[in-house]
Length: 301
Image 1 (cartoon, rainbow, N blue to C red):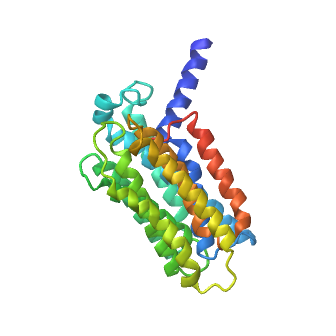
Image 2: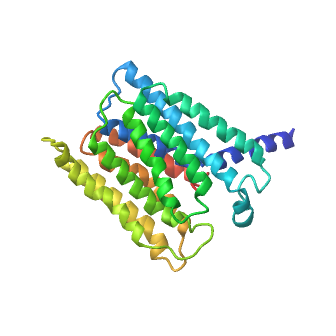
Image 3: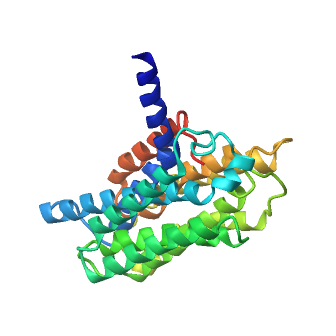
């Protein structure tokens, strides 16, 4: 019986590694932040139902993207990352393809029924995922494609509310795109090494400027500046800390920088919503803690 238990454990671990599930709290955080920024509420049962379907669909699409990422990258992983589930023999490439496509279709099924805009955003997200998985090892512009996935996720979450899609949400979505571009610029060097261009990292500062500009843009009279300042300080300190592992270490630790910045997506979300509902800060901190906890067991990249 022992080999059977070991085999089951190995299969579960392979699935968790393929899905990079330590990043799921950042997906949920993105959904919550965009929902709040769009003016969505969670009081009525209909709102709660839509938000639940949003979380389910976003989770499945994220997992699909991660599974298909490994399916497309089999040859690269065999050369540079032989410990990944497919080249290590923990799971077959065919199984990963089937699971990835199945999750993609199920994720779309959770989302396309809500409204026309949500359907378009869901399709845009799915297309961005497939495009990134296909091209990210072939082009230097892959960080922009990765950022596009999170941009569409933000727009999708906002579109599932009953409120119209405002310009402030669109600006926040582009800020998230910029954050992911800066992060992915470093992640591309994690497996192969080499010099990292520092200029894309300046994009990580864009959310700070936006957080202080949004209240004026939206014309809010009652602004919780204390909350914004706290969120800005936490975001800035965590981002700088993460970058130091790459730019101020004698031996660049790309993995620690990327893992830190991935968890920092939750702080990004908290920063942009801090002027609206500080009570939700508890939820965002919970997501942040979960991301860090999960990273101890499942690598984020």
